Length: 230
Image (cartoon, rainbow, N blue to C red):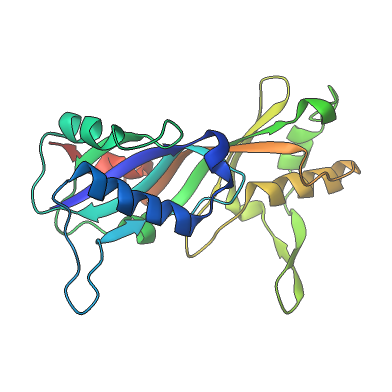
């Protein structure tokens, strides 16, 4: 049985990396004594596939992983059983059965929603006055650094929505996944450059709200939209 699990990552656990999150779930599933499937061979491991690894320091309300189970109880029961073995900062919100032919979470990711908030000590009531003008540009260029070089790129096509959210926050929907992936901090850095404001790397708090797949007929859908409750 292919299962898609939606979970949160909040609080101090925003500082643990993706590999630690993988190990955490492996241990939690063992503690919960659920009937999860293991790979065959000399060194069997739980069959898990995470959608889009979250950067260190970011919180999220919309993380996903796919897992294979031999048997399960109802979705409601499985959420309760597994959450009893989890800490408050990581909690399962959905447990849905996938069709056998469904693409895995990692290959399905196309976009994600984020809210970026300025920390109180850096807050300036005029900070987002030029956000609309910034978003209307035909080209938004940044210099992206890699281990070996630097290259200029246009991130405008990867920004699907951008708007002010409350007094000191920005909402954005951006490209996410293995084909195209735009980090929210790059958008904020580009905005700071546009406004000629100082870029403060640790001046913002970023939360992922949801992770999406793309359907040609329905547009962007949450990754859990293709699954069914048991």
